[in-house]
Amino acid sequence: DRAKASRMRHLRYLEGQDEQHQRRLMLVRDLQHAAAQGQLKLVYQPQIDTKSGEINGFEALMRWHHPTLGLVSPDEFIGLAEQSGNIALLTRWLIDSVGRQMAEWEARGRMLRISINLSAQDVIDPALPDRLESVMHHYRLSPARLCLEVTESAIIQDPVLAHRTLEKLRCRGFRIAVDDFGTGYSSLSQIRSLPIEELKIDKSFIFGLDDSADDRTIVRSTIELGHNLGLEIVAEGVESSVSRQLLNELGCDYLQGYFISRPMAVEDVPDWIEQYDSQKSTGKGSDKG
Ligand code: C2E
Ligand code: MG
Ligand code: MG
Ligand code: MG
Image (cartoon, rainbow, N blue to C red):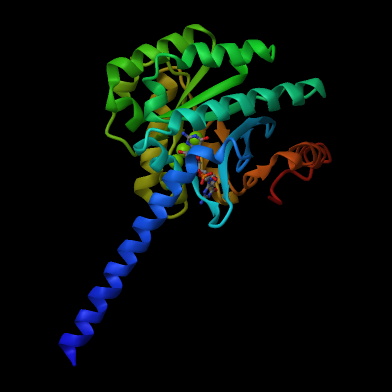
């Protein structure tokens, strides 16, 4: 009968909640050892210059291969790491791994620009600038080759402290980008006072470029205003040749997205670069994806 069915549904709902809860507890517990046990990996997604098509650099994105749960998405574990106070551990691993990787590429003659993502707590960590600087120094890398991506919402949580850390980082020569721009509550006028050089327009606006006049307007005016403030503009989430074409017409400086390439394993990066460059030089373009 109806009452019984409804009780069953509620029970299943509670069980579902419980499973979610169990999973979160497990992830938080295991996060603490993920780096030490070699379960973290970085994948790299290329970013190209819109006009020339040249490779500008790569964004390093974290992956967690959990021993029993399999691949866990950063959208799930980064938030948990922040809430449970474990993010500094992950960021330390990130900075170290990226430094080592850049040095290895450089030793083989590849000077690549790399972007990494910082979380809200990293941005207010007073030890971060020194840590970043010492890793770059250790591997003899120029800080200008490392771009630090920070979301608007991370800055908004503690604007004064965040501003201070970013100023320090900027002074030491790191490049700073605002990530997921358009999804937070800040406006370009608030962002103007920050020591940044790059805006990454959130992919949700880029997805809509083909068929939403509103999204086109938002993207167009972000690019215009950003340029007027002396910022370079990156579009993330470029999935089609149509959006690539539109972004080219709108004057977007750099493109990143599945249309160019999905994030790839570190060992695939050299081959990808070679293939991409040879396609470009034979005039076939990169439009094959
Ligand atoms: P994000 O920094 O905005 O990175 C872009 C995300 O969009 C990545 O998801 C990337 O794989 C995805 N993406 C890129 N191009 C396309 C496209 O054309 N279509 C679609 N559908 N997606 C695209 P991912 O790797 O799952 O990372 C999600 C978020 O997790 C990142 O967003 C970033 O905020 C965070 N994250 C990743 N790695 C790290 C890290 O090392 N540290 C911190 N603090 N956060 C990280
Ligand atoms: Mg990012
Ligand atoms: Mg983003
Ligand atoms: Mg994002």
